Amino acid sequence: MASFLLIAASSDIGAATDRMLRAEGHRVVTTARSTDRIQPDTVLDAADFDAVDAAVAAAGDLDGIAVFAGSMLLKPAHLTSRAQFDDIVAASLATAFAAVRAAGAHMRSGGSVVLVSSAAALAGLPNHDAIAAAKAGVIGLTLSAAASYASRGLRVNAVAPGLVQTRLTAGLTASATSRHVSEAMHPLGRLGEPDDVARAVAFLLDPANDWITGQVLGVDGGLGSIRPRQRA
Image 1 (spheres, rainbow, N blue to C red):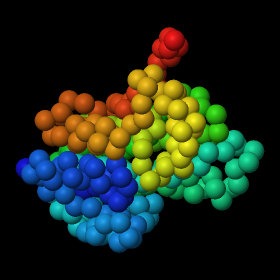
Image 2 (image 1 turned 90 degrees about the horizontal axis):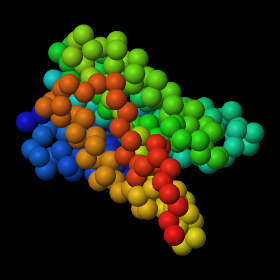
Image 3 (image 1 turned 180 degrees about the vertical axis):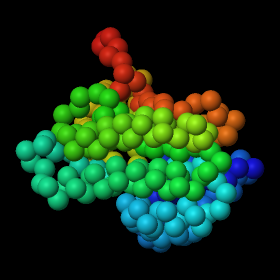
Image 4 (image 1 turned 90 degrees about the vertical axis):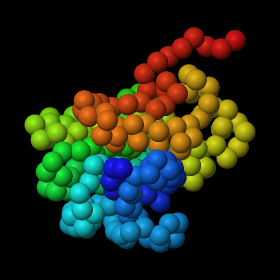
């Protein structure tokens, strides 16, 4: 049995990962911003460095930490306010940095940190300017932190999902037309499900996979990396 801390576990992907890890018999500690969706072990703002540090310290010996915090904003840069940009960076990048910082301080015997980037950081998608900037920062953090902590056996990896059907993205597929457009963007022809990403997170958290670090795993139906032939 391994022990994991899931930060922002109230997200749909976080909740799916929680269920998956518990079903495998692992110990899971959770955090969330509020008790509206789940009853977390700790209520905190995942962008609060001190609060995350305290949560990691309180969780005891951990084999891994995964961070699921994020937000959605689809606007070009010139229509994005500074406040909106700051919110995106706080939700997607500051939360990831807070977790890496706490893991570096407390996981002295190694383990795994899994962050969440996005296919938008790998492929040029219109109106994803702020999200792409923040999620690209997560990739840079993943690579640098993996190098910083490799000698201690602390692995840092990321998943980069495409469009996953969650409460956060529900508005993007509200109509049949918008859903069809979104599906067509993904070479495999469908949108993701929370379990698709949760399986990848669980894989990277697993202590058995301790020869993997500094990797960004696209869980995106091919969106971030391939351009297939058009379907007839």
